[in-house]
Length: 237
Image 1 (tube, rainbow, N blue to C red):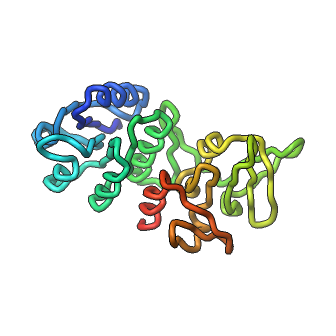
Image 2: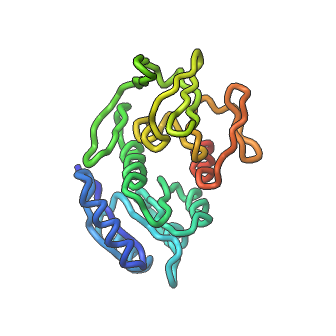
Image 3: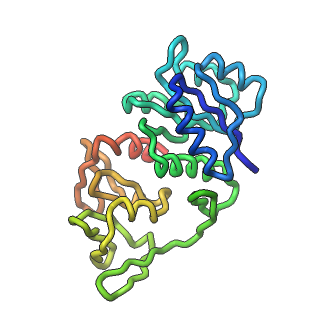
């Protein structure tokens, strides 16, 4: 079953990018494109929609005002050029937000979150060009000539070290030759979260969040500005 998607944005460029991205995912179907919130409200009243890609800053009626008017709200992914607007949507239960210009890998992650929230099974859905199921609870890490099988539950955090990553577990430190972006793509985003350009942590290991820092096993980590909104959303549940 495909999710019926609606694009609501006053920028033609955003329409083109989102339409292209949607077409690359088998589980999504674009059913409409609206240039403003009023047009979108009328469309939703007469057409079934599962997922809306919604801009916030639009003339006449903003995306937030549109959300307030909907009695039966589909899943929402906010698309905006202004990070300060993203927090405004969380009280309306938005699934995720995408900062413009939107990158395809970030788009995939947001859509995957929607799929996961709508799934009635416990298995995790991961999207590449289509959705695949992956129920593994571990990762293989290569250090020099050795390969380690490490359970996700044993990983505390990842720290960047030049072209390498330091992987800290409950029992050891493993150094792997991978970039932060490459590792982030491999990890399940329901367990791990990136909090800084040089740090990924196991979300389940976070003990405290205070003054823009988190604490894991007594160690303090700064939270980058670009990653704070996502962390706060996850912490609020």
